[in-house]
Length: 200
Image (cartoon, rainbow, N blue to C red; front, side):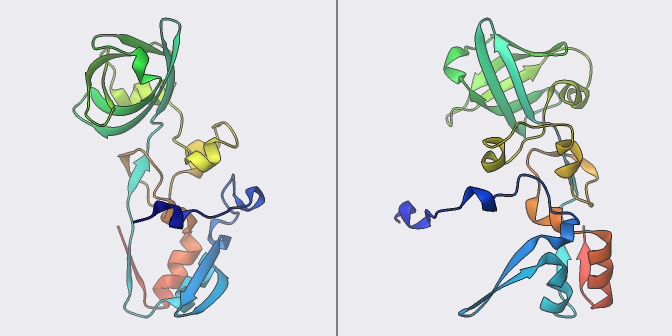
Protein backbone atom coordinates (compact mmCIF):
# COMPACT_ATOMS: atom_id res chain seq x y z
CA UNK A 1 0.00 0.00 0.00
CA UNK A 2 1.27 3.50 -0.84
CA UNK A 3 0.58 5.73 2.16
CA UNK A 4 1.32 8.83 0.06
CA UNK A 5 -2.03 8.23 -1.64
CA UNK A 6 -3.63 9.36 1.63
CA UNK A 7 -1.83 12.73 1.60
CA UNK A 8 -3.90 15.80 0.84
CA UNK A 9 -3.66 19.56 1.19
CA UNK A 10 -5.74 21.07 3.98
CA UNK A 11 -5.73 24.87 3.93
CA UNK A 12 -4.95 26.30 7.38
CA UNK A 13 -8.03 28.53 7.28
CA UNK A 14 -10.24 25.41 7.13
CA UNK A 15 -8.85 23.91 10.36
CA UNK A 16 -11.23 24.74 13.21
CA UNK A 17 -9.30 25.56 16.38
CA UNK A 18 -12.48 25.77 18.50
CA UNK A 19 -15.77 23.86 18.34
CA UNK A 20 -18.61 25.20 16.20
CA UNK A 21 -21.29 27.12 18.11
CA UNK A 22 -23.78 25.64 18.40
CA UNK A 23 -21.98 22.34 18.09
CA UNK A 24 -24.61 20.78 15.84
CA UNK A 25 -23.90 23.50 13.24
CA UNK A 26 -20.60 21.76 12.36
CA UNK A 27 -20.16 20.94 8.69
CA UNK A 28 -20.95 17.44 7.43
CA UNK A 29 -19.82 15.98 4.11
CA UNK A 30 -22.47 13.72 2.62
CA UNK A 31 -21.38 11.15 0.04
CA UNK A 32 -24.13 9.28 -1.83
CA UNK A 33 -22.60 7.15 -4.56
CA UNK A 34 -20.82 9.66 -6.78
CA UNK A 35 -22.77 12.65 -5.39
CA UNK A 36 -21.06 14.82 -2.77
CA UNK A 37 -22.80 17.61 -0.88
CA UNK A 38 -22.11 19.91 2.05
CA UNK A 39 -24.53 19.58 4.95
CA UNK A 40 -24.47 20.19 8.72
CA UNK A 41 -24.66 17.75 11.61
CA UNK A 42 -28.13 19.11 12.38
CA UNK A 43 -29.29 17.55 9.07
CA UNK A 44 -28.75 14.03 10.46
CA UNK A 45 -32.45 13.42 11.36
CA UNK A 46 -33.28 13.84 7.65
CA UNK A 47 -30.32 11.76 6.44
CA UNK A 48 -30.74 8.69 8.67
CA UNK A 49 -33.69 6.28 8.56
CA UNK A 50 -36.31 5.54 11.21
CA UNK A 51 -35.12 2.48 13.12
CA UNK A 52 -31.43 3.43 12.85
CA UNK A 53 -29.50 3.49 16.12
CA UNK A 54 -26.55 5.71 17.05
CA UNK A 55 -24.25 4.37 19.78
CA UNK A 56 -22.20 6.88 21.78
CA UNK A 57 -19.06 6.55 23.85
CA UNK A 58 -19.76 7.84 27.39
CA UNK A 59 -16.18 8.19 28.61
CA UNK A 60 -14.98 11.52 29.92
CA UNK A 61 -11.67 12.83 28.61
CA UNK A 62 -9.02 13.22 31.30
CA UNK A 63 -6.20 15.81 31.20
CA UNK A 64 -3.73 13.20 29.95
CA UNK A 65 -0.94 15.47 28.67
CA UNK A 66 1.83 16.41 31.06
CA UNK A 67 4.90 18.62 30.80
CA UNK A 68 7.73 18.04 33.24
CA UNK A 69 11.43 17.78 33.90
CA UNK A 70 14.04 15.21 34.79
CA UNK A 71 16.93 17.34 35.88
CA UNK A 72 17.55 19.84 33.09
CA UNK A 73 15.72 17.78 30.46
CA UNK A 74 12.21 18.81 29.39
CA UNK A 75 9.87 15.82 29.23
CA UNK A 76 6.45 15.72 27.57
CA UNK A 77 4.17 12.77 28.32
CA UNK A 78 0.83 11.79 26.79
CA UNK A 79 -0.84 9.01 28.77
CA UNK A 80 -2.51 6.41 26.58
CA UNK A 81 -3.12 3.19 28.52
CA UNK A 82 -3.75 2.56 32.20
CA UNK A 83 -1.84 -0.40 33.59
CA UNK A 84 -2.97 -0.27 37.23
CA UNK A 85 -4.16 2.11 39.94
CA UNK A 86 -0.98 4.25 39.75
CA UNK A 87 0.67 3.11 36.50
CA UNK A 88 0.15 4.51 32.99
CA UNK A 89 1.85 3.86 29.68
CA UNK A 90 2.77 7.15 28.01
CA UNK A 91 4.18 8.32 24.73
CA UNK A 92 7.05 10.53 25.82
CA UNK A 93 8.75 13.39 24.05
CA UNK A 94 12.49 13.34 24.80
CA UNK A 95 12.23 9.72 26.02
CA UNK A 96 15.91 9.11 25.26
CA UNK A 97 16.69 11.21 28.36
CA UNK A 98 14.86 8.75 30.63
CA UNK A 99 16.13 5.59 32.29
CA UNK A 100 14.41 3.08 34.58
CA UNK A 101 13.98 4.50 38.11
CA UNK A 102 14.34 8.12 36.94
CA UNK A 103 11.81 10.52 38.45
CA UNK A 104 9.97 13.09 36.34
CA UNK A 105 8.58 16.19 38.08
CA UNK A 106 5.39 17.44 36.42
CA UNK A 107 4.72 20.40 38.72
CA UNK A 108 2.09 20.88 41.39
CA UNK A 109 3.78 18.22 43.50
CA UNK A 110 3.10 15.56 40.85
CA UNK A 111 5.97 13.14 40.23
CA UNK A 112 6.25 9.83 38.42
CA UNK A 113 8.97 7.19 38.31
CA UNK A 114 10.03 5.43 35.10
CA UNK A 115 9.22 1.73 35.51
CA UNK A 116 9.68 0.20 32.07
CA UNK A 117 10.06 0.89 28.35
CA UNK A 118 7.77 -0.89 25.86
CA UNK A 119 8.73 -2.34 22.49
CA UNK A 120 6.84 0.52 20.84
CA UNK A 121 8.96 3.10 22.69
CA UNK A 122 6.24 3.95 25.24
CA UNK A 123 7.30 4.54 28.84
CA UNK A 124 5.53 3.02 31.86
CA UNK A 125 5.16 5.69 34.54
CA UNK A 126 4.32 5.06 38.20
CA UNK A 127 2.71 8.10 39.81
CA UNK A 128 4.03 8.63 43.31
CA UNK A 129 2.11 9.60 46.45
CA UNK A 130 -1.21 8.65 48.02
CA UNK A 131 -3.65 10.86 46.10
CA UNK A 132 -5.62 9.18 43.31
CA UNK A 133 -3.95 9.67 39.93
CA UNK A 134 -7.12 11.37 38.66
CA UNK A 135 -6.59 14.18 41.19
CA UNK A 136 -2.93 14.48 40.23
CA UNK A 137 -3.87 14.80 36.56
CA UNK A 138 -6.46 17.47 37.31
CA UNK A 139 -3.71 19.42 39.02
CA UNK A 140 -0.85 18.97 36.55
CA UNK A 141 -2.34 17.72 33.28
CA UNK A 142 -3.75 19.37 30.17
CA UNK A 143 -6.38 18.19 27.76
CA UNK A 144 -4.86 16.13 24.92
CA UNK A 145 -5.64 18.27 21.89
CA UNK A 146 -5.47 16.67 18.44
CA UNK A 147 -2.02 17.33 16.92
CA UNK A 148 -3.45 19.47 14.11
CA UNK A 149 -4.85 21.84 16.77
CA UNK A 150 -2.00 21.60 19.29
CA UNK A 151 0.44 22.71 16.58
CA UNK A 152 -1.61 25.89 16.06
CA UNK A 153 -2.36 27.00 19.65
CA UNK A 154 -1.64 26.05 23.27
CA UNK A 155 -4.19 24.22 25.42
CA UNK A 156 -6.25 26.41 27.75
CA UNK A 157 -9.00 26.16 30.37
CA UNK A 158 -11.78 26.21 27.75
CA UNK A 159 -10.49 22.91 26.39
CA UNK A 160 -11.55 21.09 29.58
CA UNK A 161 -15.18 21.54 28.56
CA UNK A 162 -14.79 21.92 24.78
CA UNK A 163 -13.35 18.40 24.46
CA UNK A 164 -16.07 16.64 26.45
CA UNK A 165 -19.17 15.27 24.76
CA UNK A 166 -22.67 15.71 26.17
CA UNK A 167 -22.55 11.95 26.95
CA UNK A 168 -19.36 12.06 29.08
CA UNK A 169 -19.86 10.20 32.36
CA UNK A 170 -16.95 7.88 33.17
CA UNK A 171 -13.36 9.15 33.45
CA UNK A 172 -10.80 7.42 31.32
CA UNK A 173 -10.61 8.61 27.71
CA UNK A 174 -7.24 10.02 26.68
CA UNK A 175 -8.62 11.51 23.46
CA UNK A 176 -11.97 13.06 22.68
CA UNK A 177 -14.49 10.85 20.84
CA UNK A 178 -14.58 13.59 18.21
CA UNK A 179 -17.67 12.62 16.18
CA UNK A 180 -19.84 12.81 19.30
CA UNK A 181 -18.61 16.34 20.09
CA UNK A 182 -21.12 17.68 17.54
CA UNK A 183 -24.22 16.31 19.25
CA UNK A 184 -26.51 18.52 21.33
CA UNK A 185 -29.69 17.91 23.34
CA UNK A 186 -31.63 19.61 20.51
CA UNK A 187 -30.19 17.21 17.93
CA UNK A 188 -30.84 14.14 20.10
CA UNK A 189 -34.46 15.26 20.53
CA UNK A 190 -34.88 15.71 16.78
CA UNK A 191 -33.33 12.31 16.11
CA UNK A 192 -35.77 10.73 18.57
CA UNK A 193 -38.72 12.43 16.86
CA UNK A 194 -37.48 10.98 13.56
CA UNK A 195 -37.45 7.44 15.03
CA UNK A 196 -33.65 7.25 15.38
CA UNK A 197 -32.42 5.86 18.69
CA UNK A 198 -29.43 7.16 20.65
CA UNK A 199 -27.71 4.71 23.03
CA UNK A 200 -24.72 4.96 25.38
